Image 1 (cartoon, rainbow, N blue to C red):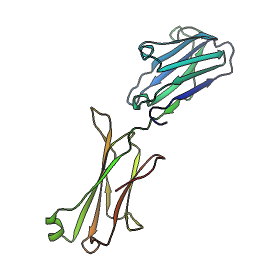
Image 2 (image 1 turned 135 degrees about the vertical axis):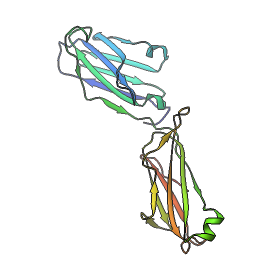
Image 3 (image 1 turned 120 degrees about the vertical axis):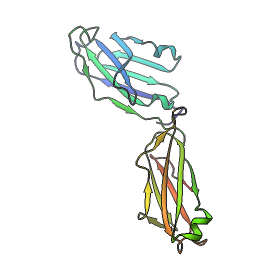
Length: 209
């Protein structure tokens, strides 16, 4: 999903005896589940603390026992998580009665597109070495699922390419960055050749430099 839009998740089950229904959120890197919504029956639903302090952020419905929806408004990257729906015959999952979970829905909120820059080789490298290194830096993007390809003119280059095995995340901004390096011979590194680094960010438009 794209940032600032809304999304609706739907939960359906087939047991009319399961009056209790729960929505849980599990963020990336967290082992535990946070209770987001609790329902004791049809048209009886409550957003749990601390989530209900987010005004107009979450809304939930339960028009019938076997169905519930969870609406998340004004999506932000912080909303990226796994969302689970569970049902039970009892009000508490700690009462000894089991809760039955669905497979969960993975929500990924797309943040900023990558900023892409190619760093040219130094003058020392171009004059002293048989090969030169071009460095492609993609930064300030979210989430971390991107791929990088190099082309010279219209030809894709796969040899002599070294891309970081994973993107690194800034602790403050939570945005990611990644680097890729292309080694080319000095014969290829000439003005008439166009070197291009393309960063593919999910299904969004490619960002190229």
